[in-house]
Length: 330
Ligand code: FES
Ligand SMILES: [Fe+2]
Image (cartoon, rainbow, N blue to C red; front, side):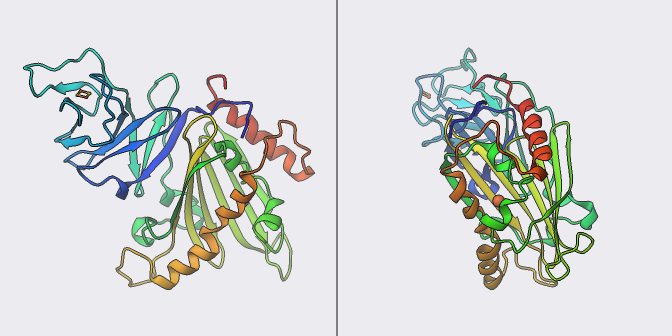
């Protein structure tokens, strides 16, 4: 997909579910046109570094070993700390600190691992919300109130030709629900607000029996925290929370991470949802992303869209808001 803005936006981006990086593991990553390695040290902390060893260029994510808090190169055993600086050379008495690997800021919350990407290399400038703390109107919650999202209620799509902004444009797009997601009626965009690095919306679906805007049967609270990060809380007959992260791989494709947290049945101690719940949630709610992908995979980006009247303002505001994350030219 050709877009008139960069595929290297500033912000937090998801790179894995926590369980994909067990203690002692090192895995290769490919994001923002580069190569990285993610590893979890012996104390359980996840780290992300650029992948290629400054010694002779081996990839630390293909055969690298975790040693304490270091990642050890598979080629000649040089060890690098979480700051990307060489800590030891096994056959010499001092390290070579002349070339450090780039160390990516990492946060890990609600079973997901995120990196901070800034093309200028600056430190994180905002925080990501916690999925369990959003939409306090719906009632407070914590992770214990829900089944785990990964792996049962999560989907991963690799290298899709979709820029992260296209995903966000779904939230104010109230018309597509009827056509793409077979919704019985159009939602009312009850609220939208672009503040700083957040863009939040509330969409309400009137009860189909009355079809009155005063009788809302389902509300979706959506939160974008930067251009690759979206969160939503569904509140109606059924309630659940989700995240949808889009992380650019290169200047044409992105990886997509989609997870649903489904409320735990009272008294059920199992971390995973029961099989019937898994099947139903996957069929009814996890698959909706495929509906959108069916459009996105073939869509082109229109700079001056022929807006429907109700969409013009919130959509325009979203596009204007998104520009703050594009700090370099395409
Ligand atoms: S290439 Fe990594 S230690 Fe030689
Ligand atoms: Fe959609």
